Image (tube, rainbow, N blue to C red; front, side, top):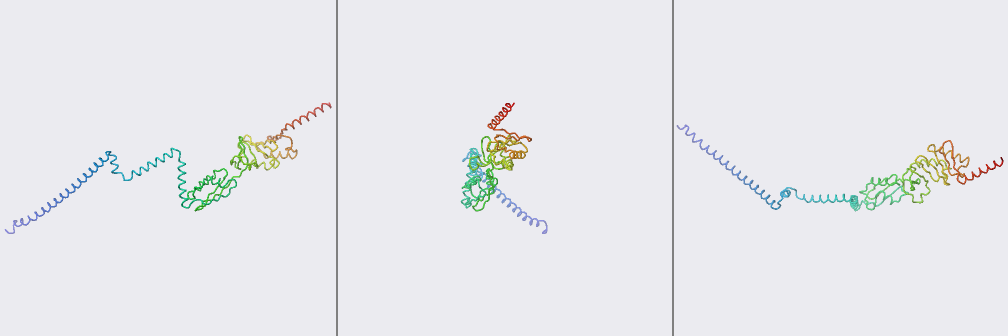
Length: 335
C-alpha cells in the first residue's frame, strides 16, 4: 500500500504545523506592539495629570491655571496696553481735553513732516487790501507749526471763507514748501446803525467789523433793522438824483417797509413805500421850480402820491404867523 493515504498524511502534516506557527508568531508580535502603545498612552496620561497637578499647585485657581496653559503668550501684555490706552482715552474725553489731545497729535505729526523737509518756507497771498498777511493766515488756521504735507487745503479755504471780509478763497500747496492763497475780499460799502451800535457792512449786507476806524467815516449811513440788506439797491436808486444824493447824511429804514432820508442840514424827507423813484423825481422838480430844499423847513412828506406836505421850522413858522397877523391887522384897519 505504498500509494495509499498513509503517505499522503505524512506529507500534509508538516505543512499545517508550519502555517500555525507563523500565525502564532504574528499574534505575539501584535500583542507586543499593543502593549507598547498602551504603555506610551498611559505614560502620556500620567504626564498630563502631573502637569495639571503641578499647575494647580502653583496656582490653585483653576480658571487662571487654564488661562496660563491655553492663552497665547504675550496676550497679557497686549491686553494691558489696551486697558491703559482705553483708560487714557476715557480720561481725555471725560475731562474735556479732546481738542487739546487732537492739537497735540497734530503738532507732533507736523513736527515730523517739518523735520522731513515739508515745512512751509514761503507764503504768497494775493487779493488782500483790508486784511494783513498775518490776519489772513490766522483766519485760515496756518501757523508756524503747520507743515505743507499735512495742511488740508479745503479746510483752510473753508476757514478763510468764514471770515466776513473774505468772499472767496483758493489755496494751493506747491511742494516741497510753498503755499499760495488767493482771496477775494468784500469791500466796505456803508455804515449800519441799529440799537445804537454802528458797524461796517459790505454791499451784500455782511457785517465786516464794528465801526472803530476813521477810515470808514466817509461811508454812507443806513439806520434800522433790515437796512443792511436793502441798502445797496436803495442807495443806487438815490444816486440817480444828484441833488438829493449830494446832501444825503443818512437813510433810515422805517418799520422794515419804507425809507426816510436825513439831509446834512437836518431836513427829513419821508418817502412812500412804493414808487420811490417817482417820489424822488417829483422832489427834484419841486426843488428846481421852487428851491424847496433851500427853504427854512424841517420835513417834506412825499408819502401821498397826489400831494406834497412840508413842515416849517419853528423860526419860519413864527415868522409866518407874525406875517399873517400883520396882514390881518392891515385888513382890519382898512375896514
